Length: 154
Image 1 (cartoon, rainbow, N blue to C red):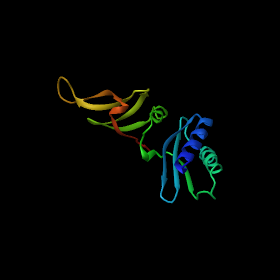
Image 2: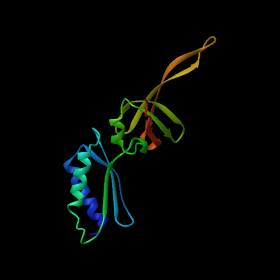
Image 3: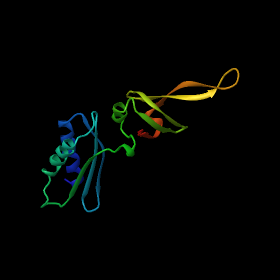
Image 4: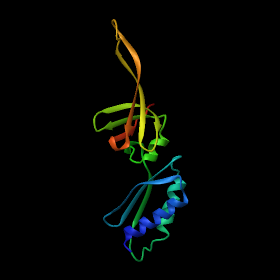
């Protein structure tokens, strides 16, 4: 069994033991540098990263094949790539690039097929001079999303 297959198998077992966690990305770089990025429905703690790391590291033999291992949580700047990440970010502000246009608004809903964003916009009054604030809402299917990032506000 190759190192890649061993890591994949051990990772699947470790994630089954902690069902609130899910895999974002797993890579093995040159020199057997294993990099695993995880996320969780309630976030990821240092203890979660340690548990996943130990589940993999303690079951690989360094005598057989030398390796280095990094287990980390998904960063806010990375963007959202997994459907479960959207659900945990409901209520936060997102910038979403779809295949047609870019939206920026509060994520008010996320289900298995789409997200719904809501924002306020200033638009000309239908009658008369001046502008009026209107609330807009858009539904974007996951397969139409090119990129989505959480906007951090201070």
